Length: 370
Image (cartoon, rainbow, N blue to C red; front, side, top):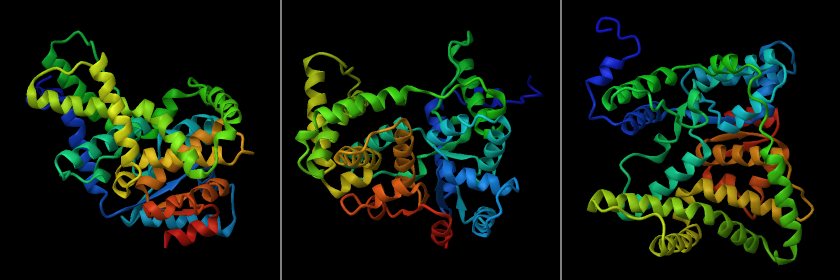
């Protein structure tokens, strides 16, 4: 093995002081720095299907051909890249025909440069940590946009082998080597391996039905969009405040060496304080700027709820996650007309707030790339 360290295990055995978390963060920082000069162009499923059709010779509309050509040229010239999110991946797996699924994955490999955003939950946690540090330390040494990118093989989040049976140092080296190996795997390879083994997740169908029932029951309470937003924000903070409290607790533990309990009256009080703190924070421009995934998602759910005739459907949740990914960290968002109307409406104006140009047809897409 000493002369044939194919996967870099021995290299990592020589650096046991570098934790797995630090190794991952270094790779992400390097990736983020390499993308500084490129604009991020986010395509939802509609546009990936259009471009795949053009690439396969199945679509011949001049504007569609021009859009693919322009994006390809911009990618090759180092001007743009087209990252995906876990919602793109989930919708890709729902394509029933394995040949078109694989063709879409190959096009994503080419135009994305193998890059995805980190998973939605990871972005929420990253933004919370970044926000906490901005208040505690008054500065963050690494721009957050350098930390939100990963590789396509980790589009659903970072998973590492554990309980390998090796000693701690060897397991750590194996984990880092495995991460490096997966870091380079193309999406098309993963799609080919998965085949038809991953059926579509139907959990959003149940969630849509439950939320529609709750929205109808409480519709009389909604007197304005601002009131609706506040109700939605309080609801989501029930889930997010414990994450903020945990981040602060870990910071305290590192400084004091004292363990902070995650249960009991003291913990409950800390979580409640974080609910109040985050609610007030998102009222401020700085809070909206850093906690952008939280703000965008809350706006979209509030907008859907404020439109009392709208019934949520399972695909709406993927659309909302597309919007959270695109508006927060990309310069251009190519999407459906209905979602474009929602995110650009005057009472939310998320496109203006985050400087993301939103287009819903091919002509608009061509103009947005200029």
